[in-house]
Length: 120
Image 1 (cartoon, rainbow, N blue to C red):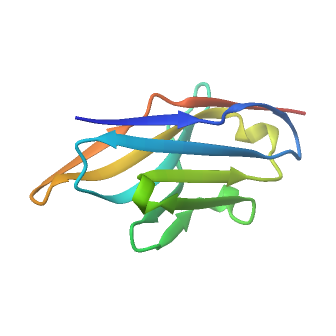
Image 2 (image 1 turned 180 degrees about the vertical axis):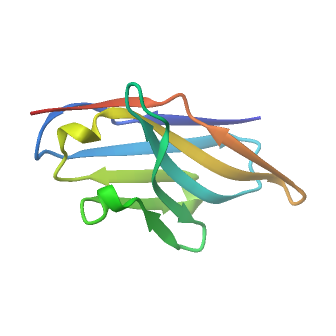
């Protein structure tokens, strides 16, 4: 079993910054893609950013130039630095991991989520 735990959410004023972290633990052989998704009230969960173990990165258009995703492969941890936050960034942010629990078994895991609230 693999656990993902997010941290770093909170309340911030518009224009401010937050840094989210997500640490994976448990039965991990290797993590391929790690990513951040978010879900605002009444809306579907949407992609924010993903990063592959080799370093390839993808961002949603709405966060390009403001958010930066990074990861520490040795610590099985992914980060999301969020700058110039806007009220529309308010959501529960979820960490996702595409995990090889052994060389032949690939599983996807989600963290429980962390709330980010941006006040205007």
